[in-house]
Image 1 (cartoon, rainbow, N blue to C red):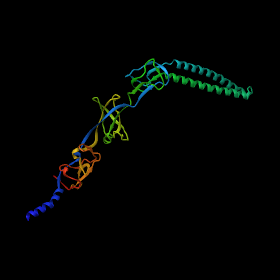
Image 2 (cartoon, rainbow, N blue to C red; image 1 turned 135 degrees about the vertical axis):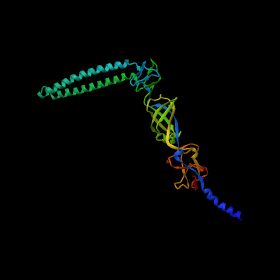
Image 3 (spheres, rainbow, N blue to C red; image 1 turned 180 degrees about the vertical axis):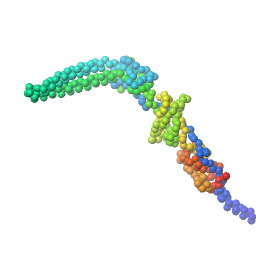
Image 4 (cartoon, one colour; image 1 turned 60 degrees about the horizontal axis):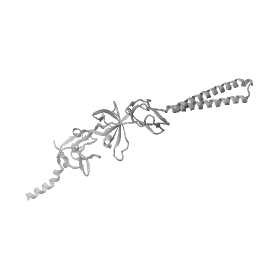
Length: 334
């Protein structure tokens, strides 16, 4: 009889004992870790130009070679300008002729205006003089436009660097015939560079608030700062493209390496990330200190640290957490 009563007592007491699991707790700030992050990156130039001719002419001089660093406005290639020199001279002569005709028409119109009040010229004669002056003015304007066009065509025989950069390709040689639209030279800007890196949406959130950020390539470290992060997620890679700018001396265009930063958001060590009811999260002690609460962590991966927005004094269930479920009653050990 005594044994039966004891068995009944133990059976009734077992749930109570299980519900009073003894655990220890640790503050989040004590176990939190700072995550070192990095992502593959490369240096690109915002200006890359394929230079071609706008006229048809033979190449008479290539003034720069592949690998040369050139300044804005520097001559890179010169085309035969003989026919365009002739056109310019013809336009100058036409402008001189039009100018002389305008001067004569102006003098005649001024004379007609002076004589008209005294009736030395008729109204028709004055009207004719004014009309001839307007025609001469228009002819002079046309001559000036023709000269400007001739000078523009002449200028197009000299292909110049549009910006500071490095010549990366020479696609034509001296004596060859250049035609409009056919590539002659390729130029890559050596200034106005950016570091481009594709990062996961989870990493992008930390990169957006991280300081400092570094670009590491071939054993050298360069200071960079985040300029912008794409507002869309790429369909194939499921990443967001980030663009960074150098804050000091830049790396060379085309350099490859990694962007490296420390995520300012504190992270939960992987040992504290548990699965309950098919969800990943962390077990916390309730405010009254007697119950287990479950904080789900969307986007967390089992076995990896995960950034979490918790106060430093949040109480994490430490010893005994593997056996607990949300809502369990616990007793905290001294």
